[in-house]
Image (cartoon, rainbow, N blue to C red):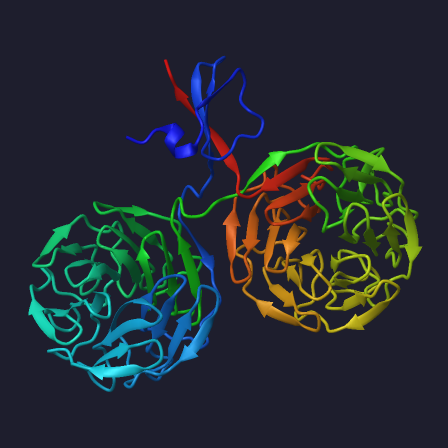
Length: 599
């Protein structure tokens, strides 16, 4: 039998108190508490959907194969019926060779984006056509015994089960021919979905007519009715295997999602967007994708089940010496060296807009440093704890500040003022030698700004505008690779854009529209947290292709400042609506300690 010593190379250590920095998986004995303890990495407690990059061509009534990192979608209708095939690598979609026969409402199976089967459906009428995919092209193979539409299927290219639809039969495919096997107990089509690893193991759920909750399990010889879905549904999506499956969507457009654990169905987090006539695939209910459908034919969402994703957590750090909102920060700083400057501090019952206080965080406490030369609020900031820029802002009176100051680790020095970006509530990214400032608004000119201005270490130059004008937005990154997220146009927005050094490109929007949030990280790994409406605690992560919900701030607020990376960040100051000096530290992965009683 394996021992702890044999597995870990050391004995369980005795301590009178818990060790300061235990290793993940390490077990120790706390002699004072008379308990064994170990540290583990926190993972997501529940499954959830996040937005993925859209299909190249939107469509509905399509089919799919593969996994979340190696997926394939094919056919469907735009209308008209489509033969298009698109391959997914976990991030983006690439158009591949077309089906030989355009079709909709058909079956699909396969384990990756290089191995799949497409069968049945509607061309101009019901078809029995069957095609195999080899990663490059589709090849006609043996037709199904009976032409039909509205069927479903599961398994692999070499071992597929096709069932239901406009006929009652179930057919088994062995890579060369079809064999009719036992029929479903209740014939139906347009299933909520199907799941299965081969032609000897499958799950069929939902369908019509009438729209039903029925679930049936196939064991290689016959179908058995098992526990039903909680919600009757049809024209929905599904994926997984017979013991671990997911059902999602419904007609009319619904976002409801249910998890099958091998015995029963349970409600899960909803799709971000309700839809029907969609498809999806995944090797189990732990990870997969949903694509296409109505009313979002190009929409893609990614599912990650409980326990599959390492999660971050917020912990309380040392408070600012001066509580304030609308402050700036060295947004590329670290948890042990970040600068906070300016902002609005309460004073005698009247907010002081011309805050000039500067503080440096050392990982534990904030220390007062030399003040800005020109106090202001609503400014942007870039840089580190030893080299930063404070850009623009608001005086309170007379209004906009065009001032820019540079921090050298000891004091602030005035440098060239901003030009077209002479505004407040802007965002910025970069360093003291190469930066961009974007968005915001001019106190004297109504409406948000789309202007972007680049800093080269000595002066500012106007460059290409944002696609969406806005203020109170979040941003971070570098002069050549940055992200702009959220803000306010005429209302809260979730719009996100990516900067490539020359121009802005729209990317997938955040899950939650907001203004006055604050962000840390880089263009392809970026956390945006807090903001309005309602002094939010919500936090979202951009991973380069999609946004996903993260653990909330411990204390919701808006108009804060932030700094750091997406795995080790800081979030400080703000208002709730009172001005606060709160600091929270974000760490991914986060850990917890489990106690094992020895009594």
